[in-house]
View 1 (cartoon, rainbow, N blue to C red):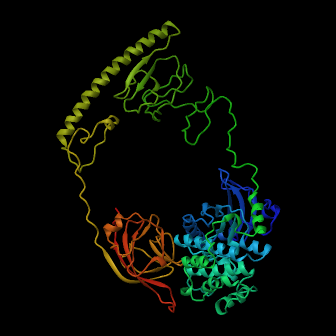
View 2: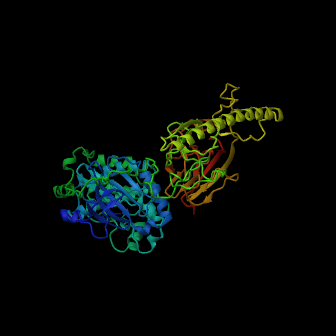
View 3: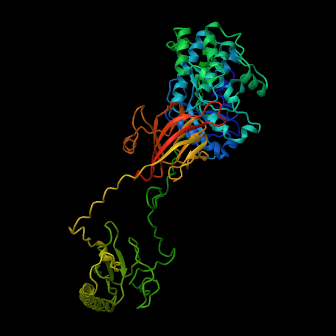
Length: 634
C-alpha cells in the first residue's frame, strides 16, 4: 500500500470524496475521505473518538481470502504495534481476522517523498541529509522490533513538518506469501529492491540499507539510481550493473555508494549511516523542523493539515426510543423476568407438585386426588388463587432472595419435610363454606402432625439401620441424600483433620539434542521425542525459524527470552526470566547465545545458537543445540 496520500497539491486532490463502493465506517471509525489506493488496497481518513486523525488501510478482499497472507499479516501487525519511533507512523488499531483485514496508523499531514520530488524536483543536500538521518532512526526502531521493512521506497516515506515518517513496515512480507503477487497484482516497486531481494535470496536488515541508499539517490537526483522501465530490466541492472550516480551531489556520494554495495556485508549499519550524515553536514540532527524542507514542499504540508472531518465524529451513540409504561426493556446484562399473561391469555399454568386446583372457583382443571406431580415448582412463579384456603411453603434450602411458592391445597395434602406451612383462609361467602373450611383446616392440621411424627421416626430408624449395616468407607459409592443434606456440613467443615498438603513434584529430566540444523521456514515441536525440524510456519507449532529472519514462538501462549551474553541458561533461570518476546531476530544471535523457550503446551526449552549456514549454501539454516524439559510449567 503506497502511502497515505495520493499525488497532487490541492485539497480536492488530496482528500477524495467517498464513492458509492466505499464504506461509510470501518469498525466504528467514520470515514471522512479517501486518501489513496495501491496494490494492497485503499487508504481512508478517519478520526479517533478523541479527534486525532488516523489513516485506515483496508486490505483488498483477494488478499484476505489467502490464509497464509492472513497469518503473516497478523504476525507483522503484532510486531508493528511495538514500533514506537519518532520517525515512524505507529499502528494504533487493526483487525486481522475480519472479513476484510484493516489497520489504522497515525495520519501524517505531509506529502510522500515520491509526490514531493515529482511535483517540485530533487531536494537540496541539507534536506536529503536530514531525511536519511531520520529514516535511519526509523529503521533502527523497526529492526529492533524484529521487522525487515522489505518495501522501503519514496512512496512509503512521508514528509512532515518535524521530519520524515516511515510507513507500511512489514506489510510486504505478508504480501509475499500470497499467490496473487504472481498473477497480475504488483506489490512494491522493483526500482528500490536490493540485489538479494531481486534474486530471491535471504532478506535481512541490510536489505533495507540498500533501499535507503536508493531513496537518498532518488531524493538528491530526482530519478532512481538504476533507471526506470520494465520490471525485469530494472531488476537485472540492480543485480548485475552499477547505479547511475552522475547527478548525485558530491557530499552525498560516500553515503549513497556505501549503501548501494552489492554485498550485504559491505553495507553500513544504521548507526554508521547516521554518522555519515553527521559527517557530511553538522546540522543533521533534525533540530530545525520548521524549515528543513523547501518552501513549496512545506506548502503541501499546510494543505494536508486541513483534513476534513466526517459528518459526525465520533459516531453518535444509539439511543433507544422511549417505551410506553410496561415491563422493563431487555438488557444483555440484566436477566429478563418472566412475564405473567393477564387472565384469559396464554396457556393455563400447571400447579406445582402436590397441589391440586379447584375448578369450582378458578376455572383451572382439577387434578386427580392421588395423581403424581408432573412439573416441579418454579421458584418465584405466582399461581392464581381463588377464595379457597391457601398454603404457603417456604423451603429453607432455597436461596435467599427468592419468592416463596404460593400453592393451592387439597384435603389430605402433606407438604414435604422441612417446609413451613402457613394457613391463609379467605373470607367465606356463605355459612356452609365457613363450616367446610374449618373442617378441612382441622383435618389438615391433624394430617400434618401425624405425617411429621411418622417422618422423624422413620428418619431416625433409617439412620440407625444405615449405620449398623454399612460402615463408613471412603471408596464406596455415596448414598442418595435428601435435598436437606445439601446444607449439611462435611467432615472438614466440622473441624475434622485437614487435607494433607500435596507433595512438590520433582523437576523433569532434561532431554538434550545436539547440532540441529533448523532450516528457514521450518519448525520444532518440543513435545516430540525425536526432535527434528519439520516444514512449515504456523501458530500451532512451538518454535519456528521464520523466513523473515527471526525465531518465533508460534504456539498460543508461547514465549521467548534472549539471555544476556555470558548468562548461563538452566531450567531455574528460564523459569525466573520475565523479559518475554514473541520473536527474536536472528541477527541478535551470536555463537553460544542462548534463548529460553516456553510453549503453550507446558514444555520449556533452552536453545543454544552455534552458527549459521554459509553464503554459498543452497539453503539457509541455523545450527542449534536444544535442551527440553517436558511438562515443566505446571
